[in-house]
Length: 116
Length: 519
Image 1 (tube, one colour):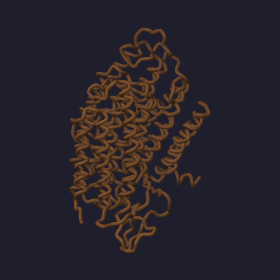
Image 2 (spheres, rainbow over the protein chains, first blue to last red; image 1 turned 45 degrees about the vertical axis):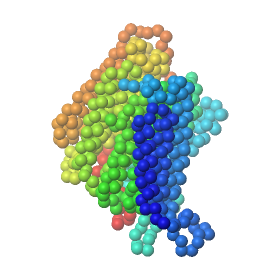
Image 3 (spheres, each protein chain N blue to C red; image 1 turned 90 degrees about the vertical axis):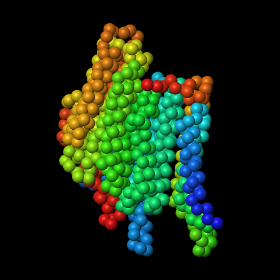
Image 4 (cartoon, rainbow over the protein chains, first blue to last red; image 1 turned 135 degrees about the vertical axis):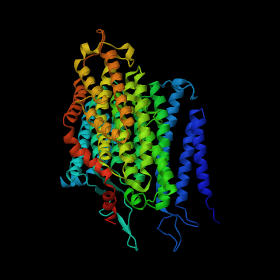
């Protein structure tokens, strides 16, 4: 069964939702969730790029004869991107923890002493 | 020696990376061991960067290749097409020029920070992250691969935000860290999405390969828009500058200058993508004018915001933002006319590129001076300072040199590059030159205000006015760069700026041919 362009639509939706959350949510944790959604959307987009209908994982060892393989490069890219995403999310969340410790709130409207 | 020259590109990344992970361990041995190690790593990195630059400029800025993990980098297909699949570094005049800037800034930054951290906690973490950031910036400047560019971009993002926010006991640094990290991540995601779009169309990640097959289709334009937004955000161009004053202002003083070098690396990425990746497949006039519009906004908003600051660090930060505008203006003018390629377009490119180096030197000097001033007075508020010139004569002189250079007063280096920009921008439209010159004059007014507030006035008691040699030497070194580049601009423009501008302006074919073998 072909899934057509569905993964791309889902990826685009995830990115749009993420950017919406990033722009309009007031809670720092929700901002981080928005950023994670954008990352997930981009990762899904990358994986979908390399997908071939009925393809198998691109590992040559013990691979069945004459099978189609999905493209390996986008998967390598996605893995790298997931690792980077982990680092950025961890850093953002730890900043959020310390902001809560200093300001006593996670509301972006109250955490803005740096302006002008 | 030959091997060292051959492997210079990868050593530029490997040495600081090794340093970054070894510093926390060596820091356990004590402060002296750590400083020796960091100083050694910084010196070696700068020497390798100098060697690389000497090699590249020795051959007139022609691009050279470094292939990771093998001799050849291609995979010949049955059809005879040679597809570049390995990870490559491709260094031409522009990349080597940027490597020189990074080496200058990180070397002085590392040495300045030894004294800066003497009586503070957190020095080991600082040096570790600084090395990581250095590795990332060099990577962005040398790589010949779009995905690698993204990875190095994210390394610089993470390291830079770590540097802004690692002093978790400081309230404002946390706020700045979160803000900067969120925006950097967003910019990184834009770049990655664009990389995905390009890969999906052409099945390659190599910049030279992509440049040889790119057509300027609608999807390419979308990718370009994403790259443009992402990199302009990371470079701190107005209206995407909201993170920049926080980042430069809240980071430790020796760090702010390196953050500016980081912004410049993003700017370099933007120029590389516009000139080398897309070239003339897109409407360069439109994009050139977009760059010019961004540039004017950046210059004007940066300077006017600097004018109203009362926090010395934030003031210097806003003037750093405005200087990004001059680079954009120079290269934007060059891009806008890059179809017809008139002479003044090349002059504009030279000006914009030369200003990157000049700005790195004088903004670095100003950040260092502001660090020394804050150390002496214990405050960042200009209204509570005064009379520093009585006890800190050398610092005052260095401040004047930095401020005059940044505002483009002859005979300092800022004048040399800004004059090229004014001249070329005037030929395109006098209005551009008028805005640029007026903003420079305003910038001079900004620094006169700082000088009057901080250095003049009656002598104040209780100042920690002795400046340690460890801080003085890097500042004097940068001041020497400012003066030498201001006195002999012709020599440096000929030797290093012209090959760099050539690489962007004419070098697209050479860049592609080197990888695809004249195909």
